[in-house]
Image 1 (spheres, rainbow, N blue to C red):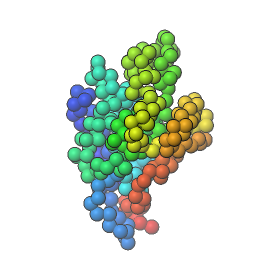
Image 2: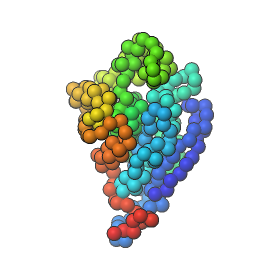
Image 3: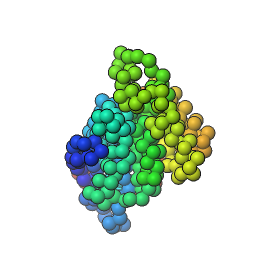
Image 4: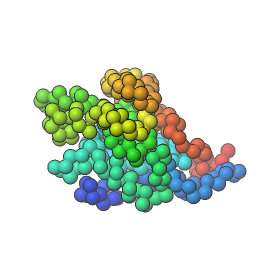
Length: 277
């Protein structure tokens, strides 16, 4: 599994941004395995949470091993504390960057499939919201969405009145990310609003995987989103497991989520920790 650290000049963000990529192009197959050939790779665009960056998934989970087992390319960008939506006044167009530009650039660079059914987006916490929102908004690109412990808090954000002890719970931060709060619920920053419009348009809505820990403060909003999606007859899988808002939970459930994806499980290649037994 090749591990690449790259910097991309983004037109939508008007700056250079760091991205980590796992690519199984150098995978040495175990003896007797069927050669894979040069088929384009299925790809997971994986988003970090608040306070995080493009290194989080590498440091916090065994994502590299899980990706290699499934012949899956993984692209991990930095999203600052943006909630992965567009904030035009600061050229922080992270929604368009994640949902469109990053996909286009990485497909030019690497042997990645351009098929919707082979293109996945996922994330945790803030990134879980970003994955759901952008997976739905750019539904022609992404076929599957993973939201782990998703910060699906737009309804709470819309009601904020002042500051809070933690910056991310204050009104100023909500307005910085989401724009005018009185317009938030009827905007494309609200996943429920997007879903309703996609249904009206007869669009092909991605399949969705939600998971949250049974001790996580975000369990309620995850359950609410799962209930809403099921009520709209969306193909959604929702799992509750032991754990809090923590890496042990995310390591366990990103593995489960990747197993849920329609990948090619070919096992680990030959490497320093595995010689094909």
